[in-house]
View: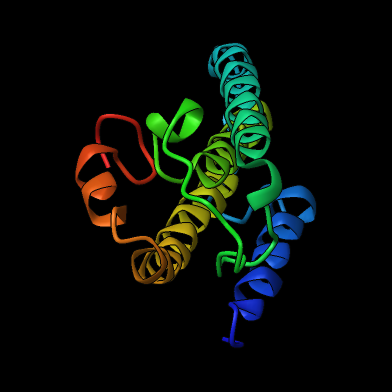
Length: 155
């Protein structure tokens, strides 16, 4: 995985490419049509906007702590407020919401599978990241108990 989680970043880029450029339908799993397409478009746009906003706010709240790698910077400080008071990984959550939104905009059950795979990937990546964060910040376990990981109020 690399000393600082470099392979997670490589895999993440692969997921982004799959969501953006991957096939939108498969034999036996076609896109859904009307009347669902209009509802899917509206919900997809709403999820995409919400996901983008959550990821952006998460990026901004990290400030100088921001790194592409899951391993925290040596001089990092623990951020627990703003978007990080809603979920521990708002950037990941926002990207997952955005992928769900993009799937709904495209009326694609296959793309919803990509979004579910992205959720699983970010859950695995965040587990490793949280081991590093717990080792660096003694207060991290208490934060984990207070704030959900990826889905506000649920998980």
